[in-house]
Length: 182
View 1 (tube, rainbow, N blue to C red):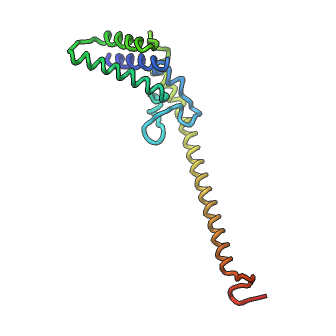
View 2 (cartoon, one colour):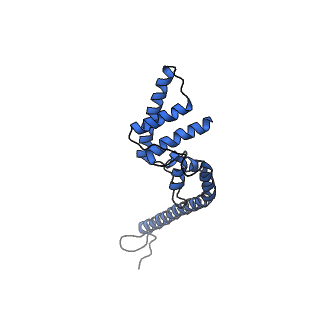
View 3 (cartoon, one colour):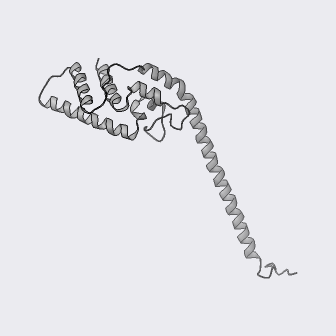
């Protein structure tokens, strides 16, 4: 019951900012052939599969900022309710959240949305392996390109060194240092 309540509040806040529920947002923004799977944020140095099911990881910077403002207002309201020791039911919280969203000029989510979390999990399960394989291949190719560039640079440096050594062993008049002259 508590998990459904928090999912409802999350969906209402995300819908206000993006026009989509969490699951709709993930399904809509997944890019299996993209560089980051469509993700805009993640933990660590690259996305992992666990990041791909989290709606906030697909938000743009303006959306994150707008969501932060709504969440701050929601939490300030909740803190005020708690300080006054007002008992509020989950149903009352949902209604209060709808009022907060409407007061801020956003559209209020009236239903649960059209995409389930299970559907999103299934899409991620299906699409992630191909994305991950392609990403690993890109990383492998990029590392070989770096290696090839390093090898080329080393060969050029060796060629330059040989040229400098040869020039230093040759006299100004074209003769060699060892006394052989033409």
